[in-house]
Amino acid sequence: MDSDGTDVLARIRLRQLIVALLIANGVLLGLTVAVAIGRPTIWVFAMLALLVVECVVFSVALRIAARGAFEMAIATLSVCIWTGALAASWLSPFTLPLHVVAAIIPAISAIPYVQRRRLLLYCLATLATTFGCAALALPVVASVVAPMVAKYLATIGFPAVTVPILLVVWHTAATLGDMAVIARRNADALRSSQRLLAERADQLTSSRARLVAATDAERRRLEQDLHDGAQQQLVAVAITLQLARQTVTTDPVAGVGLIGEAGELLQTAIAEIRRLAQGIYPPLLAREGLPGALPAAAARSPIPVRVRTDRIGRYRPDIETALYYCCLEALQNSAKHGGPTATVTIAAHQSDTGLVVTVTDTGRGFDPDRATDGTGLTNMRDRLAVIGGSMRVDSRPGTGTRLTATVPTRPLAEPVSESR
Image (tube, rainbow, N blue to C red; front, side):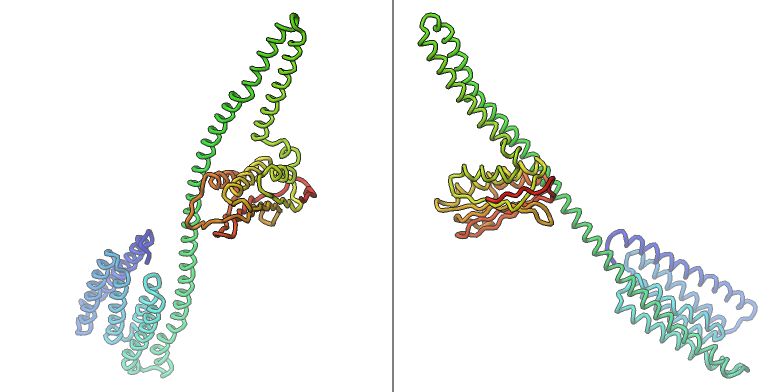
């Protein structure tokens, strides 16, 4: 049996069985003592000795069960009960029904503690014991004045009834065995699910921590870009306009020139701010979704990119944003590691399981088993994990790389007919 909480339950149940046998033997021992006092004979004292021996063996079996050796305890009980039933049938033939019932106990009690192939031995031994008890009792019963049919029914009939009883025991053991196998499989599946959930929780915790760190780093970068770029240009605009105001009255031509210079600086600042805003959330992605934003991103790539959207629709903003930046990251990786002749194909379609986006390049490729995920792949996995998605990387040296991102979702609106 499994060394878990079932051992405790098995020990308790086996102890209850042995205690019940000791109580039953104690009752029989008391009755036999009463008979011995009223009619002392050698047969009565022999039965008394048999009951005492059985009580001693049952006590030994109780100690064996307490150590956890359940199968040995059952074997000890069974041998004692079968031997006692045979001896009692010879000593007291007219109590044959009690001996037959006692001989069936081992086969029934062994079901939870022995394997099925060994249970067959218990059933055969029980059947042999019951017919042996009938054979030992038959000579004495046959000497009684009664119809012959009644004599044979009173002896052979009892062990014959044990045959269907043992068949029920056998099929019950088979059913319980199948149920135990199913229970063990379910327990293994539950432990595996719990382990996967724990790993998933750890991965989500790690990815969220990385996303928080990346968000803080991106915020600091934007602050630095605003400070070094647009802010400096706006300061230059303010200074130029201040100079223009001071000189326009004395030198109108110079003042107009300064105003024109300020306008150019202002246009540069606006362009810088637009560039930063494009990096935060592209307006084209907000207006047209992935079918519009992906071709625009492909047009800015330094390597040839083909985009196929296959009639995908609009999705939640967080899903579109995550997939958009995953595609940008993949394009950067392809341009950086794919080689000068690499080309890229971005494909997106809605499947039965969700939105699937693949980025395939014809670059150098790599061995995923020997390489570790870089910052780019880690960022993509983290972005997808937040929205419940996953990513698979397929690559071999010399055959290019294929990234497949899958997000379990459905479109929010009718598909957009767009293919580029």
